[in-house]
Image (cartoon, rainbow, N blue to C red; front, side, top):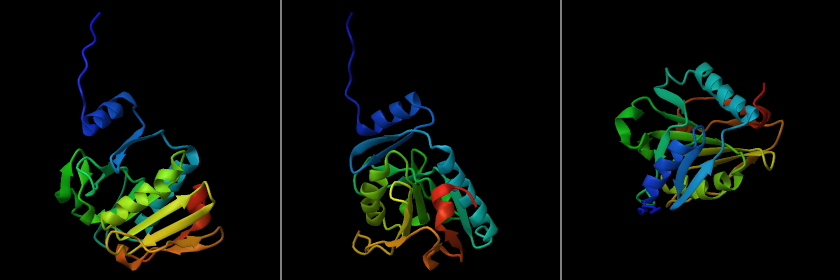
Length: 193
């Protein structure tokens, strides 16, 4: 029996994997194909809590939208894109559609990642990619190391060192996001109030 083989681009391979693995997150970071399994319950609760927190803080009235799992087109390489766990974007973000359900980085005010089994991607390549894309604020609920990191204000495609928060502390959402909100570290890490 003959097997027909064709060479796929990285983007085509990502599309095939996304169809073959429902519920998994497929991303291309720095030219590497990344596949992340579905989140656990605490991870999902953290994201639900963020939706409630930003809604309660009046994000919509401030001209913002908060969304889970939309694509962020990354400028470094032609096929690169990420799918942040949670994002705060401009209300007209849909006008900045690039392709493949991805949006231009200029409409993103804040991206949040809650670490899972792929924690090293959130703490390494995504820091670099989001800085290069000019994302004003990147918040990581680092469940592997039991802390929250906040990167802000990239300069020349790099973030300065992050501010680190421990349990019992709260993270003040940066002014660049466009609203005032304190986020308890324990809730970001555990998903419970």
